[in-house]
Length: 140
Length: 129
Image (tube, rainbow over all chains, first blue to last red; front, side, top):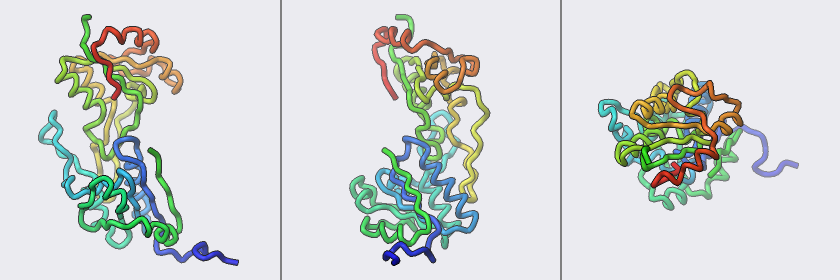
């Protein structure tokens, strides 16, 4: 007997990446960006659910560039918001980057770049159910 | 004492990459060295790998973007050394990760962690980044 929600496909999404680990603490942000590049390039439909301090990655206030390198003022370095924004524009039909409302509110990170919705955690289970595979990248 | 008043200790490697770029912990250390009258640097734990010879960090492809500014700890460390920072790597931690002292970049010395710790009282400040 099938249990509701466990039947195999078809799925709206090939991959859900749940990112709860904090940036600036390990290589998880790079891992996620590389996973996005690899899966989207192969035609997959991939969504990201950013929780915790990962909600900071797409804040509008980050702008396009990191703060200046005081040792090389002419150099420019893209912000994470710019990296995600460019991916969203490159893959408008197959990439969704969403942030957890509770975590965003808890951190005062409520203004995000265009195309990044803020979602209630109550919708997380639906996102998992709609994805063929979920990769949970956690860690404190 | 003859050396600087500040000893910076870094123990954890891999503290971000795409989001960090130029502003890695060694950049912070350089800022402390510049602003606080000098600093010594001790690498322990996974951070000893910062001082192990390796090729340049390759660029990251993220969609249409080729990110060529990922942190390169050896490049950052070379800049620190050029600025006059003295640097050591804990030899036991090196060995624990399969490295030997002859793999260290020029200017970084392997040292016994316990012997170095015995010198900590000579610093006014010992800060763990």
